[in-house]
Image (cartoon, rainbow, N blue to C red; front, side, top):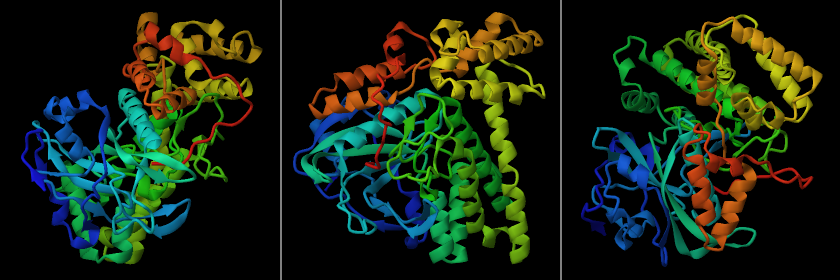
Length: 487
């Protein structure tokens, strides 16, 4: 049943103009007794929605999938992907795109429900989601947004009033996700494997129009498109590295064409600095470890380039050469964005040849002494060296002297240096033990812990007194922290 548009929705459905092979018309499966658990008021305002109306019982029916808003055209999207290196046919197995909301300033954003029931791509799954993972995605995606990292966002979480069966019975929930789009590298892989060349061309033209309209008139627009996506992903993954974020499941179906972070499953933030850090329980080989993320980004982009070969040139050999030349630019781009960011973290305004060595030497000392990643840069920024386990060590003292000599060779004042560092070094991140604490409380219907955490994470570069408590490390249990693919 379609409702009138009292909530401010302004839906369009341009994705359904693509060939039908890319989607299936699919309605959510109604749930028993949905209730609002979390609503993102600031995001709703930015979307031009009616904030008050969206917190009503009627709005909960929309967020649960029990009613379809006016103008929406629900679909499940088809895509493929390399999962831990193995290629599979995939698709939205527990997600349904309600429609594309057009904001008052003309921005087009996907509105997707996660956990609304089975779709044609569910592969035997129930299409449902548990409350804990949906709240986890809400917390981490909002933290990433506050950190200034491109990301999908969470508009609402509703409980369904019915359990989902995993290892045990868990409370069910549905998350409303907002994204620039849900077009993935895996979407292009799907087109190349099971579609026609014209299907691939239609998808590429659509993605260009939606995300890179400035290249639409380029003579070699598909090459420009490939290079644009390479650049966006190089920038995004460098931002992950700079804040110690570990995605955990960098499959090609989890890499967006828009350059947003998507699919917050077994993700987490690193405490002690170690490039081999892995949190995901299923990543037993460490394929997606922190230090491997830039390289995996390049591997995924190579798969993207392969999916575009028919569009790059009529001659197969020439198409491969064009793709290889484009992909060869990725390592330098990724390294350049990362080094630029690390200079900012150290208050360095200009470039010198030895800057990379200076950065790597600090990271080496941090690894040697098992220093906390975020708090090390926080202590440098606050000039509170006594807070760091590095203080007093010979290696750090030698490095610190070199760093000060480097800063002395630039024109900017000490105040300017510290201001640059504050803009690049978050005081607070969603530490794993704090996230777990919030989720455990939420299971008991106490959302105050989550609310307090979100408040502390909302302005991570402000260095406020409220954040002090959230900067503390967890008590050591002797057990490695593990995350699970619940989203």
